[in-house]
Length: 350
Ligand code: SF4
Image (cartoon, rainbow, N blue to C red; front, side, top):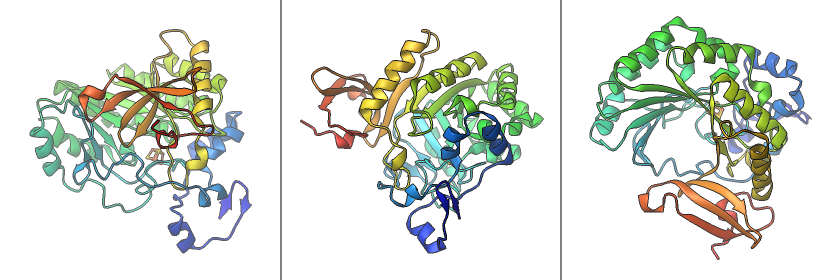
């Protein structure tokens, strides 16, 4: 197998035992990164590294199994349902936090949307669903339409959200004329279609991606962007500020900058909290008020935590952006900082 560090012979058993994600990259993305001027950053997103074999962590850092209420449906936060609709992606990110699922035949994928719709229908607090996986846009448009057949009749759903990196990996997927009709269906059912794209680096935002985003925006689709803070890829305020400014210019609202998770096979991508906070300050210093709409977030087992600052008192200040317990949302809390800490669990409770 070809690794960034060179060629190495590995057995299937070794790949499996170390949870090494399947290696597949679209020709489009290969060309995009080769011609972007940033190949030395972007290669780490999709090219395997031997560091993956040494990278410690676990395969379900956010407690997804514990929050699964029906096979393929997670209900962690009251208002949101998360559907795993496929285990496939257009290309596979080496840092993916769903390594346990992607590129495999996973039994966590939704097999029965009738059962899912029944659960959502009986939970009126759920106002939006997120179709995720894997990447929902590897599914054909008729397959996505079938999923919507179950979701659109549910009166309390206000928006249908799609989480996708296909806009970076395979933007021509979004030229499918049948997709316009699909988004129109969502509108006609009185709901808002939202696409959360996943650009980690300005070098991933191709001309084709920009054109397709603009065209779908003109059809009433809202766009947000989430990025993951990744060592060697985008741990630089200049790059992330340029990425978010480009998103803003394209009509995509910067939404989350995720702290990398301690995922087995991917924890070498983590950036320390100290450096992450410095980078976030650097991004905010470079952007105008209407561009800095992102939050620096740690998607922890206990909830989504916004990382605010490292105080002069040597404590990391944070606040729950989402939590199962509503009374915890918005409350600022702190923990003593430890040099090199990358995750809440690395910080002592007192
Ligand atoms: S596209 Fe998303 S789900 Fe697929 S490998 Fe990348 S991060 Fe994981």
